[in-house]
Length: 630
Image (cartoon, rainbow, N blue to C red; front, side):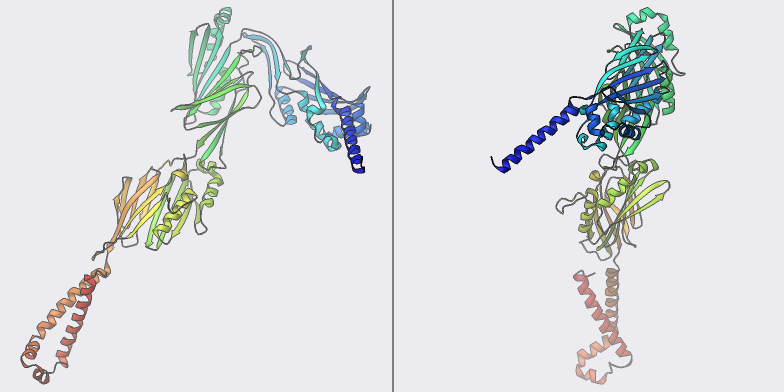
């Protein structure tokens, strides 16, 4: 065996020895966490958790220095806990104590340690429906030791790659309720209940577009339980009905169903009435809205719901369930449903032409969050096209948002606009009549250039052979002597730009020809088609706009030529008439007449010059008219 091979075997041996030491110190001697939770019927009490650090780990990680361990525990311990470390026979005991005044205080402090909302259900009842208690949690004491693992990682690198389960394990767990000790699993679940409770409870909440709610609560109980309680149950449910509510009772197979229906004009009233019909003070219903960072025309509505059915339901029975049914307008699409406190059993959703419905089954009562997605509409769009000349064209897109829409779109819409703009496009922002207005200016030197730039802006990309928006036309190819005309066909496609968003007040299209022109629609079936001088305007809700128009003005050059032609013709004829005797004399006497007559002086000279000029102009204008040069 060579020297290199010996070194390899030596390194492998040392590695195995190190792994064996780590496994011996930590892996086979996990710290067991013993828990005692002591509460009264008001849920005031304390939670004590203790774990023993073995002597081997204590020596290796802290060199057997108790003060060093105590210092680390004191420094890293969460503020909601009282932490200590003391030597015991087989190591060092780390004890954490959490004191609390009530359920809310306990939930808040546990949540701070976990970094999330814990699932804690506590029911201490003494009513006509049930008597006893139930306590259930969705976490263990091991989960509350995360801070200690972080402290160990900072202290010693051997813990860097370890998880909680590599170091800790749940030991004995007990609950002391009103002096009675009950052994429990690591995830606490203890109960002692004598009940005549309902089988299930369903709460149907319909959110209307105007912010009001329609609600129906169904209390479902077996006929056997009803017969045991008799009229007491009817009276107990009926008195829960709020003012203006509806009360119904139906027997369905082996069950009796009580229904209380009511309407609420806002969220605060809804919560108040839910608390009333569920005989509690704990119901929650909160709505938060936020824009979508990826798509400014989409937004999310997050609805948090907590319904406390503990007065009527005995969740100690596994088959007991509480159903939340949330119904919203079909314009909302379901995105997600999550449990906040960990007691969501199941959920489903469906859509029809009228509603998007989300069904949630919980047990015990759970706080859930439903996320819905919907389109953010634009209040109004104005599109302007201005013809300065054949080589100078201008287009503007103005997008109007009301305050609510502007809050949801935020900076996302402006970012979307800028991402689509060429460097020579400009963006203006303004506030007008309580509206937020974004206006994009596009300059072009030809109809083809304007078509390409418009498509690129609306679709974020463009190919010359596949333009979704086009602007075609120019001066009329058929020349007219008295009229100069422009003909344009404008085709604008907003479908890709807007996606599923709608335009509440419609799209206003405006076409402006040069000054002095009279504009007219050639084709189009949009609403409010108005012409005023050189401007034409129409309104539509179609996302594809197609407008054919023309603009006409007097052809000054053509009319000038026509006037000159007639003037020169008349003047030519007049000079011919005035020079008839000279023409006749020349024809009769030839050169002799020219010698004895003075044609180039005085009045004869003026008439002759006028005639030559008139004839020249007549010939020139005639040629231009014949070849349509005007």
